[in-house]
Length: 517
Image (cartoon, rainbow, N blue to C red; front, side, top):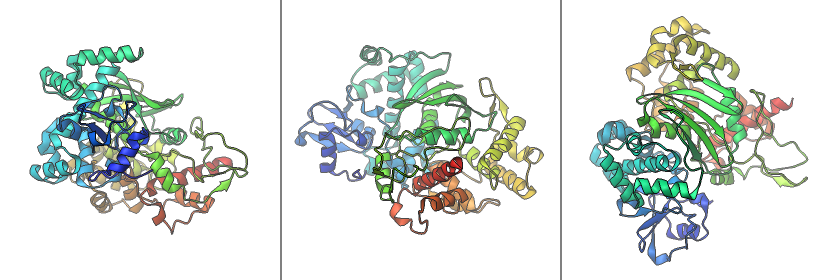
């Protein structure tokens, strides 16, 4: 797949994608048509506009800031998010991740700038230059996206939608929807219901709703299902009937989510303590499942690996039993045909909470995945905050673990002291874990902690920041997978910048090899 840069969109590449209605580029750039005042996704089914009438913009916010309205036919903001915010580590990408997590909604531009370590003026200048819009316009576009999603897919009252999407008033909500989509909220809902009879998904109770989370195909759902099921810690997570249920802390309270993989989307059932947390919760779920990845672009780079014939077993088709071992979604293949070494569409699981990720990773050091889940479940049972629902507790806060962890945690005393010490650093704010950090700074701070070595630092950085290019070369299972497939870990440059995905492939291959024994 051709790479599209953000700061200097290549007109010829973009126009070629629009002319062929290439859906792989949806969410990576937007087509603004001067004669109609509308912006679209590249795969819009409308007649391709003349070259002289279009301009290409890196974000929906840039299009809105320039006065364009969203196409009501292709719904450009409904596409999966841009993969650039994960592959890039610059200020603009880090700001976009924090905006998606609702930082501007909660603390305004000053909070965003302070988190990133820049002045408001510097931040606004960089974002306007790189993305075509400043932080306020980018946050406004994010609110408009959340509002459209709720208007078209739920029966929530408009006043509740305005509140949940982060608008300061009903008037601001109405004005923004009209400006961005050229239609009133009521008309938008009516048109959606008319176009698709099942468009309205009614909230089951106050604060509960069901959403569709789109992704770019292909998706190796078998790998994600195995990863989620194998790491379940009872009390805070549940895996049942190919459905992942868990609790999570949110900026204004907590939530419970149920995730299940469908043919072209992930079904997310949400029960929110506070509807203001909807947008950041959805962003975190997408991050957990790596739904904004560009699998075709990734697979094309990893596809240069050696190939084998169909007479050999396909590594990765079966994983160790973690409930029911899921299979991959590989298409049928002709006997004797040559095929890529790896199955397509693998994802790098992210996380829902950085503090939980680090603490659970430390708990699991030098023990098996199942043993780590057992130790975590004991911690949750002893220190987790009770909540109502199918999953009874929240993961303990860092402050609680710092205070009472020595009483509950088991294992080598040095490791227990290290976990409690890290929890204290998190609780005091000495250690900051958020998606606005750079990989270099985060890894440096992690390695400065007692009990955190290179593997833990790399693993946490990879999952927290969705860093695509971390090879877990010291991981025992990854090394076993490399040996099993004949992959030379000493020659890694050719797999950049997707070495995190290579790590997942090797991890999966090793586990599949164990299952076959």
